[in-house]
Image 1 (spheres, rainbow, N blue to C red):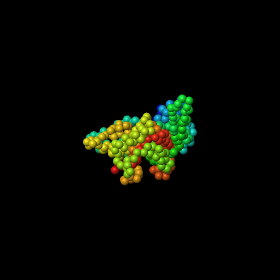
Image 2 (cartoon, rainbow, N blue to C red; image 1 turned 180 degrees about the vertical axis):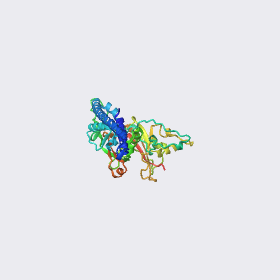
Image 3 (cartoon, rainbow, N blue to C red; image 1 turned 90 degrees about the horizontal axis):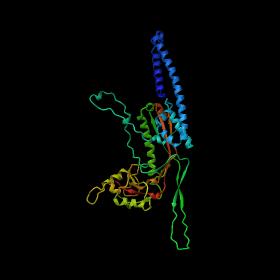
Image 4 (cartoon, rainbow, N blue to C red; image 1 turned 120 degrees about the horizontal axis):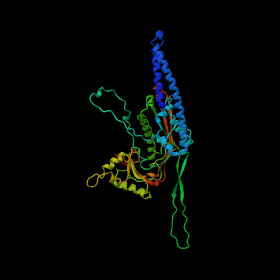
Length: 426
């Protein structure tokens, strides 16, 4: 029998014993003969269940240790498969002191800390745990008399916030996981050159030149409050809800700085990187047109960045402007024509409130480039710390959680990107 089933069985025993003890039917407020007999029977069953729980916990812990050792011995493949079963809800509930079997989560956290060489304030949570799980559910149908049916809480029908689309990784950005300390990635700055010479003449020296694309740890975090009742649920929908929300929050932070960044304590993203191509719409900016899109492509093509994940990235305001463009006969051009049949993505994390000194003072950005030259580095896992004693949460029986993520962004070759940043869309 699984530990969870044994714990539930023990809870049933205790509940029945409590019910008997609180409702004595004998003389003088004592238990009746039948109650005393039944109480002793349950007591024996409880002692037997307690021993079974102790045995199962011993076996589970031994298997976890053995499994952890085998994961370490077998290399990354076994560990990568194992961490996908990491439960964020169990990790939070375990830190909050609830009676849950969070052995797997503690074992994985210890292994992550060992591998990274870092000491986490809370529990180390693998980035793979934020990947989406597919849960198949069926909602009840409506029919005659449905108003007489009690209301069910449908976790799988959770209505999420409207969120900006996460696109950077999908566009081909290179992700570096498990970094330790600051990282300098060598970058070829200038190549050797060739030349034609006459017989017995010397070649001119033109050495290759190198510089570095640096990555250093920068931190993003989020605070949230979860109800105690939610953490006690075993529904996979609750796990998916928490997993999705934390993933969306942290991934949004990374996408935002990868696109722009450059603020206080932030990584520097594409738009704030010195040296990317700049295509201006005019002295006072201007609306999107087909020529400016071609100019943007040329600004990157002229730097020989012809290979890799060449794509456009902009926001929905620019998308709407592109959809309105017409040919000389008044027919809509279509997005394929406007963007030259190049892959494209739209996210409202691309700024639409840039102040570039135009007549309107509010501009959108349109980015084009080889997104394989965008690096996103992660320093191992993210740090999940639970505080069940935070004053506001404690008074409601809830727990506060803090998630911290350490990452950085770097552009390998600024010449691989160009942007229009003075496009008016209003």
